[in-house]
Length: 117
Image 1 (cartoon, rainbow, N blue to C red):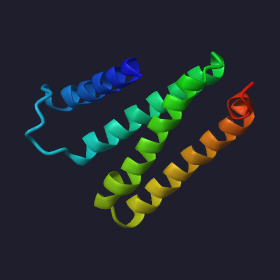
Image 2 (cartoon, helix red, strand yellow; image 1 turned 60 degrees about the vertical axis):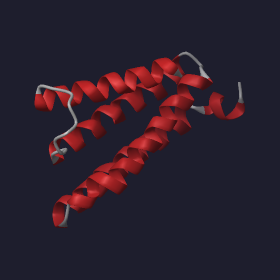
Image 3 (cartoon, one colour; image 1 turned 90 degrees about the vertical axis):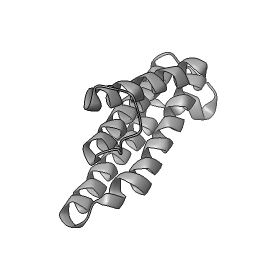
Image 4 (cartoon, rainbow, N blue to C red; image 1 turned 180 degrees about the horizontal axis):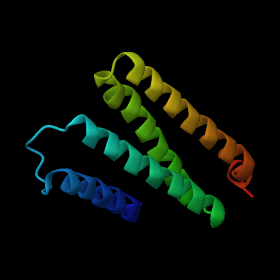
């Protein structure tokens, strides 16, 4: 769990560094940076889910699923709050497609995590 939190913190700080050249958080977060964090976290969550399935590890799979829930909440509560009109609709559709793909992969490959096998 400590490695997962450390990895998440490292990626978060790297995204901040790429946008600003520093990791100092006194400045606000521009929209592009917010979306970059969401994308990086989503990729980490999907990697966790894939690693959990690949190595049949409930712990890794659970960390990936937890991070996925955090990303979904962040997108709904923070990222989409600043959008309106067509961009908001497209963002909802994109998030819906990601959720559908994740649900499909969970149904297809995650059976052993639900049954305990």
